Image 1 (cartoon, rainbow, N blue to C red):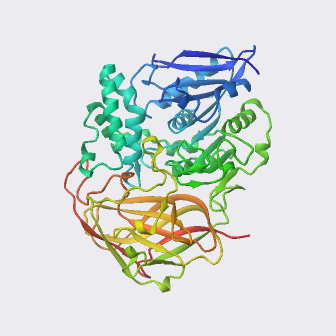
Image 2 (cartoon, one colour):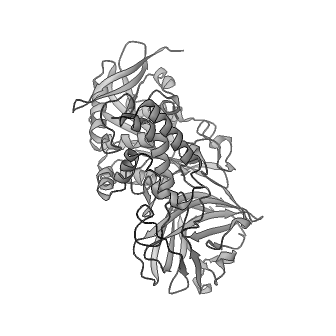
Image 3 (cartoon, rainbow, N blue to C red):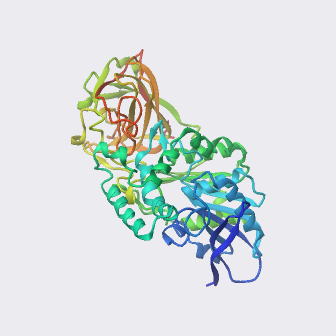
Length: 559
């Protein structure tokens, strides 16, 4: 077994004089080697993050220098932490510093998940000449569609969990709190997170007031000017680099990851995409309440690859000029749920998909599970109504969530007895033959509301013959101003790949809340962080030829 050298707290001085510190794993033999760099805000010394999904020791033994750096203002690195906003120049400077190291051959690749996927893209838009390839995993390029907002609603569960669980302890320590104060605050924050899904609604308006520094950070990243400054989605088409994008059907960054792939492919065709049945940072074979089989896991993809070997195969080609069977495969690999199998594709989205509308038909009884989905609009002529009470929101039950310690994530069993009067349910008849749905999914609704401002939510489910259902994907749309007359809205459910088996039904649920994943719309002016006033209102879903509310499904021909 090849020996390696591990150097701790190696200093990197960036252009403004700030010193950032990194751990370096490198081969012990003489020579120069390509560099794989990741930059993270979660502590480079914690294996939970530094070894999160690839093994730096194993990669160093394959002839790479692996650099894991604390970003500015986090843990050992100097400076003040301004999430996302600081990562462009710091990323550029770190890439070029790594290229100048005496044991580096000047070729740099970047890798990492979530925030340290963001840091790859932020560095790449600055075009450091030594950066040659990327491997962004479950990440985005803007904050207002995935991390902080989704469809105009606040991603409360994700954003609050990220701030309180991942950012707060070190942030408060850097803000001048004593170790004892930080310990007490950590205990208090853990209590908040433990009761996260069961807290009374009114508590959320003062969630961060236990510590002004956190409340200030929370408010800063909800400002439009901050969101605009942090967004780089409009610059992705300028990144002329090969990239291997990795996504999960139940990841909170599924939509943004797919967007990254599609935009970057426009300028550089050397993009690859893999989508597993995974949740955020969770590559196991059991996600939520569903097992997808041993070879669905990131440790045994098709019984052949693991996450580390995928990285070495990718970077061997671009940084060492070595060919690999990976490049003989189709550029897109997806896991098809229902059949529970991997499949190669030439593109995303699939060109052969037939986008088929299924129209909602309720006859006023959809909250009694009597709503239907028809592919023939002539069978539809109705209007469904329900009462939305912000004081009694629909609880989150699975999905692409990011809650404390990974709770309430992924596919969950939905029993018929769990339905509520404020959840409208529409389903097809049991299928006479299997139907594959693979691609981007939209729910187009004609709605009206008594509220000044309100939300509508939608969820796609696979219903088994015994009536139990499993959620596949969901979304939300916030209407900032409502006039209580029919208007068309479009709820983006991002994407999925699932085969609805014979005897199963395709089902959607429509409501107006999904708490605490999204913040609750009070149906009045502003949000619950700005007002304590809520209003119970009647919501209407209009249907028929004049108001063709439907879900648009990408059906894959069975050939």
